[in-house]
Amino acid sequence: MASQSDHKATIIDGKAIAQTIRNEIAEEVRHLSQKYGKVPGLAVVIVGTRKDSQSYVSMKRKACAEVGIKSVDIDLPENVSQDDLIAKVHELNATADVHGILVQLPLPNHINEEKVLSEISIEKDVDGFHPLNIGKLAMKGREPLFLPCTPKGCLELLSRSGISIKGKKAVVVGRSNIVGLPVSLLLLKADATVTVVHSCTPDPESFIREADIIIAAAGQAMMIKGSWIKPGAAVIDVGTNAIDDPSRKSGYRLVGDVDFQEACKVAGWVTPVPGGVGPMTVAMLLKNTLDGAKHAIAQ
Amino acid sequence: MASQSDHKATIIDGKAIAQTIRNEIAEEVRHLSQKYGKVPGLAVVIVGTRKDSQSYVSMKRKACAEVGIKSVDIDLPENVSQDDLIAKVHELNATADVHGILVQLPLPNHINEEKVLSEISIEKDVDGFHPLNIGKLAMKGREPLFLPCTPKGCLELLSRSGISIKGKKAVVVGRSNIVGLPVSLLLLKADATVTVVHSCTPDPESFIREADIIIAAAGQAMMIKGSWIKPGAAVIDVGTNAIDDPSRKSGYRLVGDVDFQEACKVAGWVTPVPGGVGPMTVAMLLKNTLDGAKHAIAQ
Image (cartoon, rainbow over all chains, first blue to last red):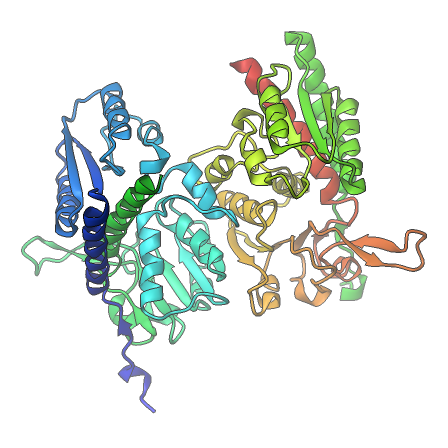
């Protein structure tokens, strides 16, 4: 028998899995186009010139192009009024060849994000953040039109890695509206016994140590040590934290919420950062847009 | 020091707490009536002649009368069509002096419950079951118009017994849309570390044993034994199960999901069945109706 130090977790290659999914989407987009003459369309709205937002948006637009989804680019100035932004959302709601609308966050301070997001038609809410979508996601017997992209990506990584969820102990670290909360609801619907730990949990380690499946979405660089992980557990690391690294030209590098090197020695499966959950989020956005188009065609 | 067998849990008297709340509501109703000349109104809709439904409905109508809420009684025949029932709901949506609409479940088989419930105006959904309400209940930074009555009653029992939630380990047994799921979301919002165990949890005892707060909502007569309860824990028993009892005239008696006698020897607090959560559910329905009326007046 190998000693523990020889143990090597299976690295879940999110980039490769996302590429497989993008190929599947491209195939379906081709099929839709041939059979119905329809091309799925995603409106990507950006306000202002934040570097990080521009980089996310350009990544999403490129990903659309790659699979044949039409990206409708809406670039609004930093000083656009809330009313004008909402008018633009209404216009996109009414545009037949737009099947998904994504408003890149954060918005400038003079704009109420919640108000703007709530104006997106539920049929085009490909981010899946509308409270009606979250409510249906939570409730037994109800199905939301769209699942939020990152949580959906986490479950896809588990299922494509052959990791079953039913009856497992799952611990979700973090309870954000975007990741922690909805992923916990998805795991519960998939029949895991789910515990949510968060900033008010006095001893997160004691819960994490018992988990068969860990979803780390706390936004705390390397908070989860190897010693916190049950041997053989599946570890999905949603964190993306920049830490100082003088050896890099940029002066920083990205790390997850999990100490990856340590996790590799004890976990059964682990996702790297970057290259784990990140690429899946974009792939799920494309999938939701495709589903939106299929839904529109079916009506 | 007393031996364990001498220990006596504090019995949380739901009936008395509910009565206190009903007195508070009656006072507020009087105040509304004096200040604005408005009386809160609750429409209680029943279809058919099921004995249990009739008994629940008559209890709710009586409770309204007691606090000065106007009960609008809608009794429809078993064979009412879905369209006619929905037309009645629309009529109540448009009736200014109706501030809450309750459709007693279950409905006859020829009627789609989900469809009917979704026709109730969100401003009058005093049961709090609309997915939009559940979504807002789940999400940080959002507040639903109404909290579902039983979960709200559970938290009210904790707070009125001086039991703090923040940082505590809470275990919810059961994940129904009506109790388990929303109560777990409420506890999470109140900063507990929450675990939901359910029919697919292989070893519920191991989770329950660690809990500072247990919410039992599985619908399994006396499934939770005294030995499963951490000494000093708060136990809220939502279960109402009829079990055979030849010594009773009726031939049965009601028991909770918790073995009450055993729980009394080890828990810090425990609710009886009946007389614990049950009376709170009705009190919270009255409270939601009052809140609906206040909301309507404020607009």
